[in-house]
Image (cartoon, rainbow, N blue to C red; front, side, top):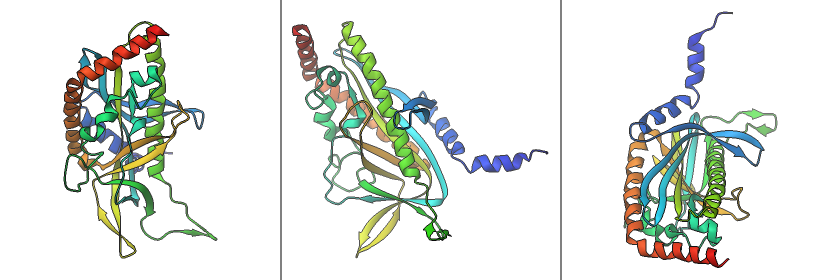
Length: 301
């Protein structure tokens, strides 16, 4: 039977692969990019991969801190027949994004609140995880806690059951958060081993979970008891998740963006990298004291 190449091309173009390749090519203009990065899914007990990893956007190396970087973890999703809707919260009380930070001192001290330099200053750090740097509401700080995947057009009925709508949002969230969980668990083991060998300057990593969507994405607001939609290019979802390396629930902030917003998003990341570098330099004395305290405690033990 002869192969119809056009049929294969049409089938491939309906998937998320063209979007993944586009995002990869855009990122490679300025960053090192790794595709299909392995992780082990502890829930389903099998190996999986995340679409794109942009590792080690280095913002500070040397001195009293050994290594500080930002890692961007990306899943790419596409849908022609479903819309993604996010519902921002009024009077939002911001949580600390504890699940996205790996801090050497947290691991050694086992005190996540006391020893993470980023937590004490995160309200000053982030352009799009909080409202502290701007007096106006913008897409960068409009945070949601709820979402819906809505099928466009009429819903098919099969007997007494409605057709199930695949939840690509939940699927994407699970993939990026499980990868981060796996990566932190892996790095923790390395850090503990290095600590035993006397290499005790801290390694700090901030993870950015990102889902890039090609399709219809909206922000939903309640107006006169009905939902009204406005199209959006970038929204942030606060999400609670229990990583595999702990019995505690952690908070994550996940960026959802349309592919045309990618360049603008990267500008935000670059700005935050510069702010983070200044933050570490400004608080170098506090950082040095915390490292020395850990060394003293380790010696006493």
